[in-house]
Length: 585
Ligand code: ADP
Image (cartoon, rainbow, N blue to C red; front, top):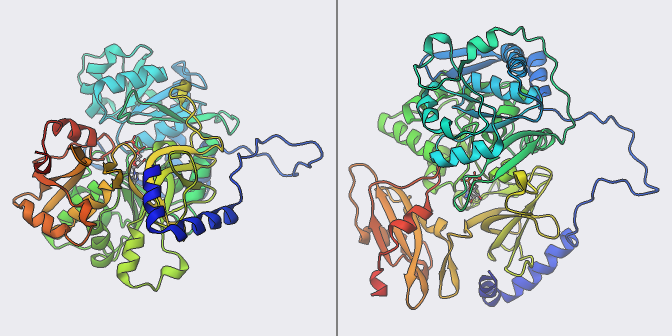
């Protein structure tokens, strides 16, 4: 990283030194956060010590928004409608049932399920009986699911009928598993070789719902989500009642992803993808109507829910929105009711931003975060002084990942851990600190991932501009080092997917005898289109620095994706490991 800083130091020496001094003056020296212990002579405030508690969100929803709807496209097929009152009752039945099955406070009870009302009930029921709701991503490899479930010591797994075949394969290897609760009724229970299958509706049907949530300190664990572990084993991020509620409150401010009771929210982002970015909490807390899409995330299905349920706000990764936009374009459809769409998990390509905002009149809120940050770290909403900027300048701001939500703190550092200037040009390792950022992993795996001042190393490389907008340039492991200087793969990819014939694009670094590494651009053309290397290079011309131009362009039929919908660079590097760039011959 030092090399890069030098690069920008050389080209913009004055800015770098000045920017550094300004950063220090504005923020003061970066000290470790206070420990929470009261020093002698300092008075404690005289305010209630009410502990933040996740089940109280559902109490609030039932009391003030009891008749508000939760709409689900069920796994069985039909649309199902219920209310927060009913979810509140049935979640307490889940708590009772888990108790009857012998689950104790502290138990990590898993869910391997799509977004449905039953999943929501199980979520609150697990946490309400003092347990930890451990969401497992069904898109993971089987041996990763086995590893995760055994590491977490899951006694029970709630799952959908569609995942019973998957569990038939992995369950024999799950060392702590006592039972699998299938989120359906008796009529839809699948035939299975598994002996310990429990029917959800029968299980909770035997309870009366008279259950007091288990009261725990707010620092007690409430949620568990493993990172996808692209290198090494997945690591468990253990959320507390406090951290999840603080994240919800922090993200709910005006310049965030706020919800009102009049909103109808489509939670496309899965509950197993880092708390569905907080929507499982913010929708009930604010009495918003919650729409859950089940397993159908294709363009027509998402469109049907958006219009049929008068959705005003929704959230998902870019790939979901590409499918929706294709459906809208192909059928000449509109989005007259939708007001806001939160997009994160990967960078928002310009073509998605422009389609939503300029063509359909829907505001895009670009979000960045990771499992370890609960997950919202930054949200991109224009500042007061950017409202009247020319459109092109606004677009350039909106393609950035955004400003940290208070009280999250960000900084970028070089290889020697020295803070870099916030000039929008210097890029370095992105570090993050705050009350809903992980300070370690479950069972101590991976050691302590914090620096001396308590900042977590995100593994991302970013710039921060003078107005505080952070922009990811790469994952640290994906950055391309050409002649000691860095090329941002994300930036090239985002421009390449703007070509009308390109569906997806990825850039990886390949060996080069003179420059160490040079970029290879890998393209998946849109269905039915064919495009040439020359067309693509001509399209990039003038939009990126000359020395960033890919040394070659190749075409493949399908892009490999990770379990959370990101392009799997590791798989691409493996696929092209013997590929020799024409410039390297
Ligand atoms: P995984 O387990 O696949 O890493 P996460 O959701 O935790 O899943 O992924 C976090 C990473 O995703 C971030 O560190 C960053 O690299 C990437 N990411 C998330 N949001 C964005 C965004 N808006 N733009 C670019 N990259 C993003």
